[in-house]
Amino acid sequence: MDLYPLYNSIRIAGISTAVIFATGIAAAYYVVKLPRIIKGIIDCIFTLPLVLPPTVVGYLLLRLLGPKRVLGAWFFYVFGIRLTMNWWSAVFSTSVVIFPLMYRTARGAFESFDVTLAQAGETLGLGKPYIFFRIVMPYCKSGIIAGTVLAFARALGEYGATTMIAGYTPGRTATISTTVYQLWRTNNDGLAMRWVLINMAISAVVLLAINIFERKSGSK
Amino acid sequence: MNLTVDIRKSYDDFGLRVKFDSDSKRIGILGASGSGKSMTLKSIAGLITPDEGLISVGNTVLYDSNKKINVKTADRNVGYLFQDYALFPNMTVRENLESALHGATRRERRAVSGRTQAGSINGQAAGTGNNKAEKQGDRRLVNTYIKKFGLEEVADHRPGELSGGQQQRTALARMLICDPGLLLLDEPFSAVDTFMKEGMRLELIRILNEYNKQVILVSHDRDEIYQMCNYLVLMDKGRVIAHGKTDELFKHPGTEVAARLTGCKNISRIEKLTEHRIKALDWGGLELVTGEKVTDDVTHAGIRAHDFIPGEHGVNVIACGQAMISKMPFEWYVTLENGLWWKLGRNLDEEYKSSVVPQYISVEPDRIVLLKAGQKTG
View 1: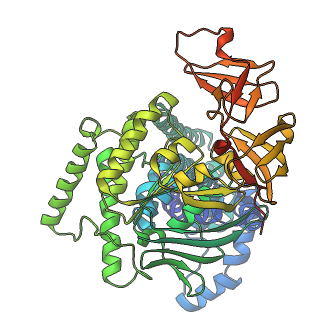
View 2: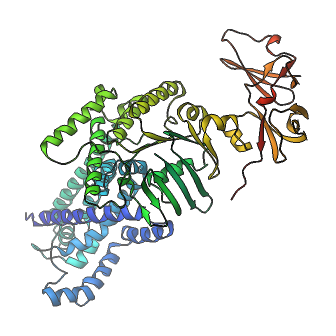
View 3: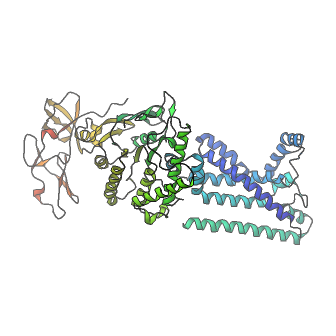
């Protein structure tokens, strides 16, 4: 059994989780501080990928990154690189799809943060980075970790947008989810079942990890 | 050091307009909740930026809208004691103190390199630099403070595991370890159980005396302010309605609102009869002789609930009539038929008998406080 799809899925999920960890937290941190009306609008835009069908996300991404579209054409012209149909193209799609998960959990965590702690830090002469990394982040730790793990699990299972932007090339862009579809289509039921079980096992482990972690931080 | 506060800030439904100055070491701001007293304190700390005005301590200007000066909170070198202490929950007591030293070091470095807009209030930051010897000095200083504030046993505990008193001492130690130039205390006892309050208050007074810093205390508790502050600022609805020496303001509050804030229980509208004679409209038309001269702008009179004497003495004799009595641990609360409140001392084992409330009580003319109407807005 060729384990490339497993490796590729984990690689894509890992990279996109890292990307949205930083961007999702940054977005949440600034959105919380915005005035109410602007906050509502931006919040809506940032959450949209959560409710859109992944195929719609994939379609929009292709309109942007496709070889004949603005960004895609520009990249090809300048760097000679095609943004679609590579294994890493899936990072674009999974990142967009899982961004709301990270953003929303982080936003919830920041909203529950006690601002007087940050104010206390300021009166003690502490700088913004210290306050953010040593006071705000530890305070919001459990929410942010839960968001990260959930986002990783979702990235692992991303199919719709990924198949549109990265396609299915065995040994190149194949992920677990696209492989399962391909195997089913070609009537290779046994192998499809094996991949299904692998996927379920990983997801179960991840969700179990969240639960254990939440219980731990809850009992403290 | 002379503290000058003259600021204005408007919100949709609230306007803050505060002006006072004092060189007293202990300034108290007394007001009901929503009077803007905490907001004033936050403005002094720089946590709220006023729309316009001036805040200065000694020669240091912290905020001046005309000169476009607005020193960042982190550079002001003010110590701020929050209502719930705002200890960092993820750090131990020791780490909380260390974080304060970290802040002091940073502030000093910024001041030296001239990145601070106008400089912080005087006071030397405790730990500076980054080399090994100074790091050790820091550790020693933290240990000194842990010992001084009786926190040895809980030094490696998180704030969540501490008692209220230990939390307050940690917050005080964290605030004082960087030697702030001005201490701002925001309702320090609002989170404390009543039976703990007295002891913690005395402890706070002891610590404040030891460090001898200028202090601004914000509270809605007049006893607290009276006990701790020799200068008093009275606030109501975002305005300063009176400021002056605490004793003086309690004796002569001047206005009706100020009298209420300083705890005067009996206040009535009056009608002036002669220069030393008034008719109290809310006390059944009771006529009273006053010590002070009644000017034409006097609209109210007040009598403190403790100022009555039982029996018939002097010119102001009041009939108790059908009085209502309620028993407190150490006091009788008596409401006379005409609505006046009288508090008199009681022993715990004293039970009510008719002799507790005599037929008549009296009040000396000097004890009648003449008041003008609530402050004019604007």
